[in-house]
Length: 359
Ligand code: NAD
Ligand code: MG
Image 1 (cartoon, rainbow, N blue to C red):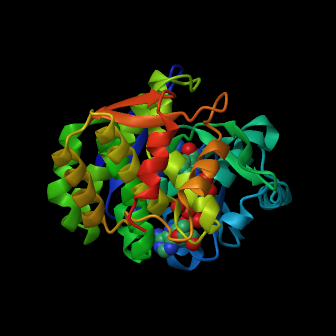
Image 2: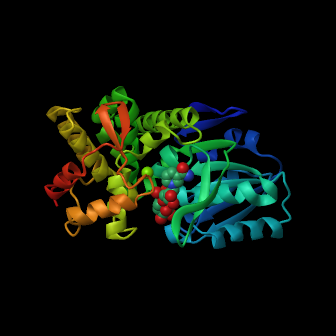
Image 3: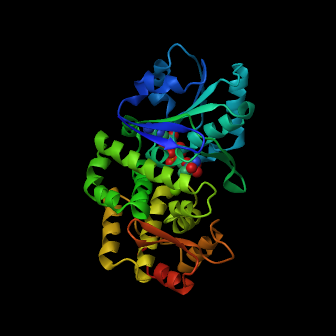
C-alpha cells in the first residue's frame, strides 16, 4: 500500500492505494465520525463488494442504500433517497457516509453528505479507475439538472479516500481504458517523466498489475491534488485538467451521452489538442507520434465520429462551458508537461484540422 496526503488549507486527508484495502479496517475506522455508518452504492457494485465492506465495518451501526446504476440516476431524486435512509435510521450529525462505487456514486454521496444536517463526514471508496484518479480528488460533489450536467453541487472534502486496486478486476475493460485517458492527461499537462513511465507501463496497467496501478493512481492523484490546491477558485491552472475536453465534449454531445464514454472522447480530444499544438509550432512531429502511440497502447480511439462534420464539431465546441466571449478557449501543449490556455487560436485552423481528421 502507498499513501498520499492531500494538504488542504485547514486540514489534510489520506488517499490510500493498494490491493486488498477493502478488508482493512484499520484504514477506515480512524475516519469514522461515530458508530453510525451509511454505505451508499449501486446495483452493479453492491453484489461485488458490499458484503466485504460490511464485514470490515463489523461492530458499527452499518446501514446501506443501494441505488440504481447509471449517469441518468445522478439527480436530486436519488440523493433524496440517501437523506431518507439517513433520517429513517435516525442518524445524527456524527454519522459517516461511505461512497462505494464509481464517480456517479461518489458525486451523489458527497453531495448528500455536504447537505445532511449541514454537513457530515464522508469517505470515498472509488471502484472505477476514473473515480480513483479524478472524481474522488478535489472535493467537487453534486448532481445533474435536466438543463445541465453537474449544475447542482457543493464542495465537500472526504475524510479519506481508500482505493482498493483489486476492485478494477471486475471493471469492464472499456471503463478501464476510459480511466486511462485521464491518467495520460496528467502526464501530458504536468509531468513528462510520468508520461515516459506510462509508455513503458501501459501493458502492465491494462493487465492490472497491482504495483503499477498503485503507482499510476497515486501519481495521478498527486498531480490533480496539486493543481486543485494551486487554484481553488478555478481561475487559472485548474483549467489544464480540461485538456482534450472541449473537443471531447463536442463528441459526447454529438454522439449522445453514453455512446462514447467520457474518457474515450477525451482521448480523441487530447489527440486533437496535440495536433493543434503541433500546427502552432509547439510540438514536433515526433511528439505527435508519441501521443498517438500512447493513446493506442491504452486502447483509446483517435478517430472522430464519421457523422460529425467539421462545422458541427466547431458549433458544439462553442457550446462548451469554457468558451468565453464567443471565442474558443482551448487547453493546448507548449511541450510535454507544459500546458497552456489560449483563446487566440485561428478558427480556420481548427476547422481545417477537423475537416481532415481521420473519421
Ligand atoms: P460510473 O460511476 O457510472 O461507473 C461506470 C460503470 O462502472 C457503472 O455502471 C458502475 O456501476 C460500474 N462499476 C463501478 N465500479 C465497478 C467495479 N469495480 N466493477 C464493475 N463495475 C463497476 O462512472 P465513472 O466513470 O466512475 O464516473 C463518472 C462520473 O464522475 C460522472 O458523473 C462525472 O460527472 C463524474 N466526475 C466527477 C468529478 C469530480 O470532480 N467530482 C470529476 C470527473 C468526473
Ligand atoms: Mg474528464
